[in-house]
Image 1: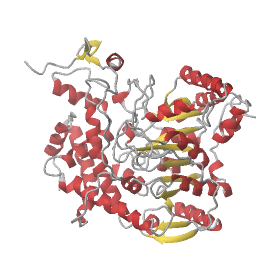
Image 2 (image 1 turned 90 degrees about the horizontal axis):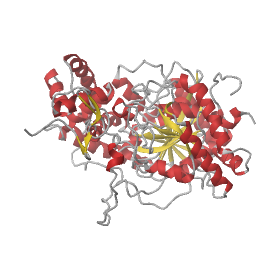
Image 3 (image 1 turned 45 degrees about the vertical axis):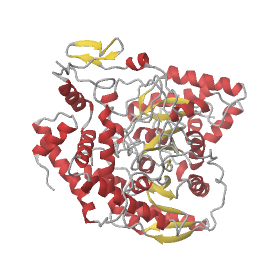
Amino acid sequence: MALSIEDIKKIAHLARIEVSENEATTTLAKLTGILGLIEQMQAVDTTGIVPMSHSQDLAQRLREDVVTKTNQREEFQKIAPVLGNGSSEKAVDHGLYLVPKVIE
Amino acid sequence: MSNTSLTNSSLFQLSQMLANKAISSVELTQAFLNRIDALNPSINAYIALDKDKTLAQAKAADARIAAGSAEPLTGIPVAQKDIFCAKDWQTTCGSKMLANFIAPYDAHVITLFNAAGAVNLGKTNMDEFAMGSSNETSYFGGVKNPWDFDRVPGGSSGGSAAAVAARLCAAATGTDTGGSIRQPASLCGFTGLKPTYGVVSRYGMIAFASSLDQAGPMAKSAEDCALMMNVMAGFDERDSTSLNRAKEDYTRELAKPLHGLKIGLPKEYFAEGLDASVATVIEAAIAEYKKLGAEIVEISLPNTGLSIPVYYVLAPAEASSNLSRYDGVRYGHRAAEYTDLMDMYNKSRAEGFGAEVKRRILIGTYVLSAGYYDAYYLKAQQIRRLIAQDFVEAFKQCDVIMGPAAPSTAFKAGEKVDDPVAMYLQDIYTISTNLAGLPGMSVPAGFSNGLPVGLQIIGNYFDEARMLNVAHQYQQVTDWHTQMPDLTMPKDIA
């Protein structure tokens, strides 16, 4: 199935990756090649075959419902990104992370 | 003893020298750091070095040896692939996205090496987020193959591979999602093992494709890999797919004779696509195994060809999900300029990821998107089971499977970088074991035009000790694994 430039832009939007017109064109060529490779799967009859999601058929482990993690907020916020838009401060304030306003 | 023979010694020899006080860990570590100083600027195997931290660990190891509480790897300098979080170390996964990321905690593998008293020499270069077979997708530049600087070391564990081959570490860690330990081991001429899925914890190992990712040792011999496995393997409750099994001694079967060993040769691994000179080397290795008393059985893994299409659905799908965490909010790269939240996400990710990573995220997003899930993702999971069943049938007829680890020797830098499909075919002999969750190794088996060729050994689930035995016995009667590249060194270091 052939991809179009519009498909590339839609996928890029879903993946939250900005693409320029130029990038969309080169990406289209490369992705078309990769999808051509993937298409080989369609020739295989897989009727009745149970999909394999993991190599070992395991049940998910359960653990005791007790606190196992300690608060490391300060440690983790040391590596916060720089705010940007002219500010070279870390994107944190009173233990919270700063992002552009989403609710007016 | 000269410093070259020191940096060329086996882990067992080094461990004995440390125990006998023939050398201290600080001296040994300094010998490697000197070699790194001299050679890393041209090879680019390491992304991050921190001599103070490294030497502090060596000093602590010496104190532990003096106190009589040393373990086999205490004081041994090990290189860590930059995919493992190591507290207070720059941990980039080869990406601009994490170029400034200082890990706030240790991966389980790092915790285990620290507990064993091993010395962290530094973080090694790799393809960005482990996506590549040549180390050329790294944000921190390509890595030279120590056998020929015009050629790639393989990938994604290219920095660890070059570090082992050039003796810039005593041993290294790698990870293998589709061949990233075995293919570079083949291209750089040393021994690498990808264990059974679930044997080594993935906690703190930056995720690529979670149902396939598995860490393992990269070292000069099977014996060294066994000693590394004794540290790395084991249950960890923080990894939901870690297998709760008893601790094993991976050296326990090394000395066993191979008489009566049944080796399966899959006809699909010797078909079109395999370089003729690589085939010759592999056939010679098989002849050597016959001399050791092994029997050869022809087997078939009929779905081998489908492993690449299946992998390029499953791995990108899992990657697109795993890499959605890089949004520029709490850590990692954030764009310098943006208008609103959506713009911040779009720009941060567009700037932070390289071309190959973006391609795989886009493929993954596409195959998981509404209307395509059954045709791609579910179909791939069904064929994954067919591939795994091929191995179940094969292991009814043999103890181990052998073949090439890679279809060719090291290729030239730049040769495949613009052709993702050609690059993906590098992993034709390795991917199916990841899909099946089986253990696989690459062992040096000879040379073609001066470039190393690796023999792949695939074992049944949890047969690592047996595979290490099979490799070790071969290394007792051959010397391919002792060959090292001729690297020009300043006199005072060589």
